[in-house]
Length: 285
Ligand code: ADP
Ligand code: AIR
Ligand code: ASP
Image (spheres, rainbow, N blue to C red):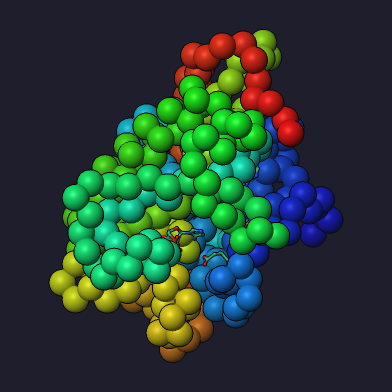
C-alpha cells in the first residue's frame, strides 16, 4: 500500500490526505477515550461501526438540506470527506439532562428538558474543551454572529430530524455534539458544512423502553458492552447484515469487509449555499 500522508492523528480518527485536492480520508480507529483522553481503551469493531453509522446519518442529513463533508465510504474503516477549515467550537444540543449538564446544575439524569438547549465548547484539548458563550466566540474571532446563527439553526434542524429518526427505531436522543467547517469559494464566498462524525461516540442514545445506554457512556461509566451497543444501533438503522459483525467481543473482519458502500449522491450535485454576511472574515487572534 502506498504511504499516505497523515494530516492529523486524533483520539478516535486519523485524517489522511485525500486523492484529490480539497478531500481527506477519515480513518475510524478502535480507540475509545474519555475525560480528555485520561481514560483510553481499544474496543474491537468500534471504528467500523462508527464509520458506518456516521456515513449513514450524514447522508440522511444531506437529504434534508444540511450540507455535510461526507462524500462516500471507501472501506470498512475509511470514508472520503471534503476538507474544511474546522470551526473550533463543539456545538452540543441537549434534549434530556445527562453528563456535564447534570454535574454543573445538579439536575437528575433523565430529566426531560422543556426545550432543547444549545451549548458551545471551545475545542482546545489543553484546556479540556471549556464551555464558552456567543460573546466569547465572536470576541475571539472563532466565528461571527452570521455564521453562528446559521450553525445554531442547522444544529436544531439536525436535532429535530435525528430525534424523529431515532424515535422510529426505539432510541431516545438525549444529547449530541456537532462540529462544523468552512470552505472558501473562488471569490471569497463562504460555505458552511457539518463535519467530523455523527455516531454513538458523540451522541447519547438510550433505549426507549429500558433507558439502557447505547453510547460512549458505556465506556465512560465502565458499563461494558460498548461494541455490542453500537452494533445494536447500527442494526436498528438497518446498516448491518442479520446477525451483525460483532460476536463475543470480537469483530468478524470478513463480514465487516463485505459491507455495502454508502455514498452521498446528493453531495455531488449539491449547490453549496453561500452564507449571506458582510465581507470581513472572522478575525484571527
Ligand atoms: P480529536 O481531534 O478530538 O482527537 P478525532 O480523533 O475524531 O478527534 O479527530 C478528527 C479530527 O479531524 C477532529 O479534530 C476534527 O475536528 C477534524 N475534522 C473532522 N472533519 C474534518 C474535515 N472535513 N476537514 C478537516 N478536519 C476535519
Ligand atoms: N461530546 C462532547 N465532547 C465530546 C463528545 N463526544 C458529546 C457527548 C455527549 C454530549 O456531547 O458524547 O453526547 C454532551 O457531553 P457532556 O459531557 O457535556 O454531557
Ligand atoms: N472524546 C473526549 C475525550 O477523549 C471527550 C469524551 O467523549 O468524553 O476526552
